[in-house]
Length: 475
Image (cartoon, rainbow, N blue to C red):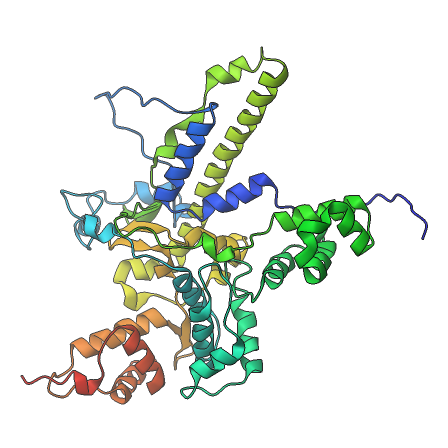
């Protein structure tokens, strides 16, 4: 085979350090983000906190820039609106989060619920178009995944755990496992390290440099990669040392423990909302919550010092300056992404904000990603462990998503709305003659939401509502 040089022009997606940092910052909650920023300020002399301006009574502090769900309606509509609209006052005073003496709402509402990897996967699984049988299998698989994101249990043990409630073959479990392995974070549900890295490589663009060789190396030489090195891998794969180095660099950029990025926060941690949704002059407005990173800036003294430095000092300052700029840009990109996602949620779920859970419409990560022109995994990272302050209280962003069920009129009803309807029916029932699951299904059908009795039973159990014979009370 004759060696030759060849040039080509193309676009490739490479996980650069900047991109990895951007993805990492996007999935952090506010307390974790502030800790990350504090660590960066302590280690990088080119970063500093900007001093707050002196307080003045001449004017109030200008509000943070906001993007509303109905900004495209223009300023004329707001200008012609009645500024004393009583509906706005009702929204300011109403809901669980609106108190005159505490604009941020009751602090007890902001105590976060610890979200584990299993919670994160089960939520995504519920948004998919899976049958009840597949959901049961998927739930068993998610329960068997450890904190690192690996499925250590054999499929035969999963089948045995499902029996006798559900009899299924290993082939059927494998098919559902492939659906689980498509969830975020990428690489979750793998049965060994090689499969975990292969799943992450498959998620990359087909034109990514070194992707093909990296897949071959992971599939055939995963156990010997540490000992082979660049030259040994090049000989084993029959490629040049440069191509082997590119493949090794790509493999090192992968995460061998994808599940470790998702974990619960300490129980004594309070939620700090990333965004705030408010009703102003009849329009829904979304603003980014002002955190400490709003005052983060580059140290101008060290920046000027760089102009006169030379040698090792100049190289050190130049590298730190580049890192500082990357951090500031990625923080800005994080805010822009959150605004895009939350604005889309407000447009799609304005009924939820207006009337409550019964008005929540079916919405999936894929639909939001398509509307804002981003990848589904990016949207998943943007909503993971994020909270938003609304007139109805501080709620997680994942509360805006729900799977759908076809209704009799050709539309769809979200699972959250159906659960709210079930709770209302149970609250209004005669305590001496509580409604059975079959009767609840009939009532829902009369309301235009035909659901099976077993679906009602599943939602009732999810709401921690006892069965009808356990709800019997003597009036």
